[in-house]
Image (cartoon, rainbow, N blue to C red):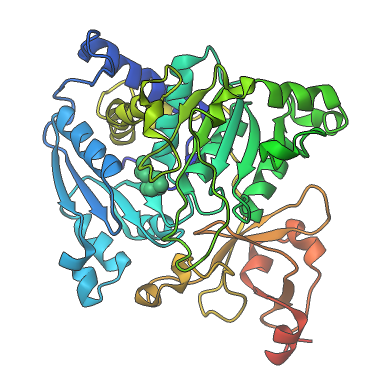
Length: 458
Ligand code: NCD
C-alpha cells in the first residue's frame, strides 16, 4: 500500500522536498505559463485526471481555498468543497474526526482549514487519504510559506544569508510561524519587529534557537526607534552557535540591509477583545529608511490597513506576485503528495535537513497534564470523544530537563512532574530521554507537584 503523507506543518517537509515542490512549480510556470503575462499562471494539464480534492474549510478564505481548487482544476482533477461550517454537519454538532472519516470516502486528498491550533494533525489521524493544512488556528499555514519562500527564491540567488524583517502580529499569525521555521532551516536571518505584546510564542522562539540553529540576539545600540525586538542569526554550521552573539558587526550588517519585509494584519479573531497599541503601518514613509531600499515587500494578504495601497506600484511590492504563486505551488504540492507523475513523489526527496522525530507520550485516560494552549484542538468540546492528550518528549539542549510538546498544536510544557502509573511513585524528569518505550507507556505527567499528590502520587 502507498504510504500516506500528511502536511500539517512546514516541518513535515524536508528541505529537499521543499526544493522538489519549487522545481515542479517552476516547470508548471515555464512549460505552461505565458511569459507575456506579468504574473504567470499555470495552464492546465491532465495529470490528476480522475482524482478528487475536497476543500473542507471551517474559517473564511479567499486565496488559499480558491488557489487549491484552481490548482486541482488545472491539474485535470475535480474538486468538492465544504466552505461554510454553518451549512455543514458541524452546525449539527458533528466532530472534525467524524467529518474527516466520512469525507475521506469522497475524495483522494483533503485540504483543511480550522480555527483550532493542531486541528489538522488531529484530522490526519482519522483520514485515510492525505491531508494538507490550509491554516489551523494560530499554529501554522505551511502552503502559504511555500508561496512566500518561492517568491524569495524567484528574487534571490539563494535563501541562505538573506535578512528578512517580519513585522506585525508575530504571536497570532500562523503564516509567520511556518515562515520563520522555514527561513531558519534554509539559513536566512530574521529581524523581528513585532507590535507590542505580539512577540513570537515562546515555543516558536525555543524551536528556532534549539532546533533550527538560530542564535537570538538583541539589536545593536541605537535601534530603539526602529521597533526591532530581536535578531535571529542562523549559524552556518550547527556547532558555531556560541560565536555570533558577541559580534557587533554582524548585528549591524543584519539590520542595515533588509532583503525582504514581511507584514501581516493583526489576527484579531485569535484573541477576541484583546486590545493592542501601535501596529506597524507600512507605507512610503516607513520605507524611506535606506535599509529597505532593496527590500521586497511581502504580505500573505488580506491587508486591512497595515500596508498602504499606494505601494502597489512600487517596484519593491511583491505581495500580489506572492499570491499569484498560490496556483503553481499548490499544483506542485498536490502532484507530489499524490505521486501523480511516476517519477515524482515526495518519497523520492526525503533527504536534506528535516526536524527530528521525538518519542511520544500519550495519556488516553486523561489522567495527567493537559495542553496549556486553550485554543488547542485537544480542548475542543466537539472532539473530546475522539482525541486525547499526546506529547512529544523533546530534549532541551541547554538544560538537563526535557519538555513535553503537544503533538497537535506544538505548544511546550516545561516543569512537569513525572509519575509511574503502576507504583504511584514520582520519578525523575531529568531521566526522560533515557526512558524506554515500555517505561514511557507506564508514565503519567502532571502539571505540578500539588496535582500529582492530589492524584495519590508520592
Ligand atoms: C492568511 C491566513 O489565513 O492565515 N491568509 C492567507 O491564507 N493568505 C493571513 C491572514 O489571514 O492574515
